[in-house]
Length: 285
Length: 188
Image (cartoon, rainbow over all chains, first blue to last red; front, side, top):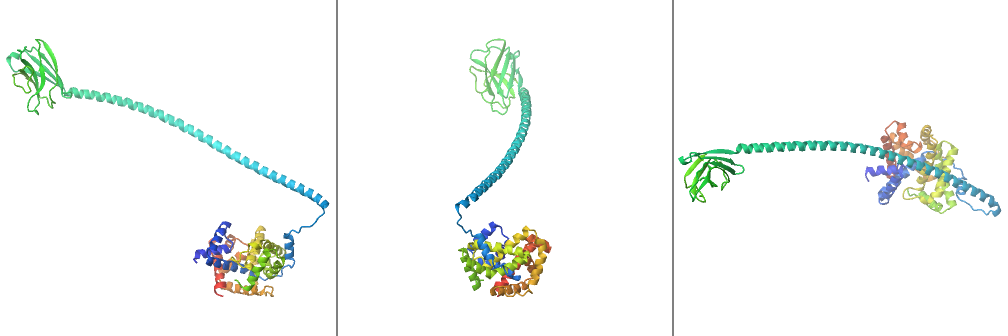
């Protein structure tokens, strides 16, 4: 048996345990004979201290007094003599019941008052909470409105930035647009003027021509774009001139152009050629 | 201690549980002097000691059926009942504080009192053994144990009185009791 068990047994013997602890310990004792014996010996040792004082002659009549006071001995009493006592007893019982009822009523009343006070307190708490919540809600609404305003500002700023960006894009696109004026390579075209506007982003352009001689049947003017990275000039299509005057023709090369270094116009057989074979009449950059 | 005396007492309690008044009177004769002496030493008043004795034996008469021989012998059971009644009375009257001096004097002098054969022979022998065993316990533990038994003081009051921490007071009382048991049961 360990020291802890001995201490617990001593607490039991000394009456130091609460009723709960005592009940638990009694249950333990039932399954531990060694601990039970030890506890019994401790209890008897503690009680034996009572023998340290001198004994005294106890009153002899006490057992009879005790037995008489504890045991109820029924006696036969004439019925008539019982009536006044019965009435008195009934009255006493009635008074007692009324008193108990009164006390109970007071207690219940007090309990209800306490309950009412509790409910009132709770209600007050709820009201306070409600006020706080309403206040918080108002604050949240203000915050929400502020956020909305900030969001609208951001939208405006975003739109302004988009516009700015668009303008920059346009500016950028314009900055990339190439304008080339073609010069005559042969005397017959000394008075001819050709201006090319090329947009590399859209891979398209416009050629404006003036004073181009009308070609013989079976021949066509063909526009070329000279890209240093391409092995051959790239065809940009035919330019059909119906007669004297100014003519604007939109064109688009047959394949992508990386760098439009020069533009040239040649005379090719009707319908054009994949590569320049005829005479180059104008060229420029 | 399952000696013949204890066995007789146990039989008497069994009969009392069945309402045997004669058995009650015999048990009273056998153990009442010791219990009355103890009650008197606690109460220091013959009338009050008699009240305590009456309350104790009323309990025994009514609750004899609750006696558990596995937990103690009849004498120990009765001693603890009467002591409990006395302490209840003492505490109710708030007399514990001034009583302890008287008690300690009583305990000191009890050793020199001739018991004039008022105890049953078995109890007389046990009384001598208890006194001898107590002499072998350390003075601190003996003092704490006697105060706990006779003064009606709570452990806190014992600690206050001895001017020691509560834990120390409890430890002295418990270890003193464990020591007493060892001397009474293991070193016979």
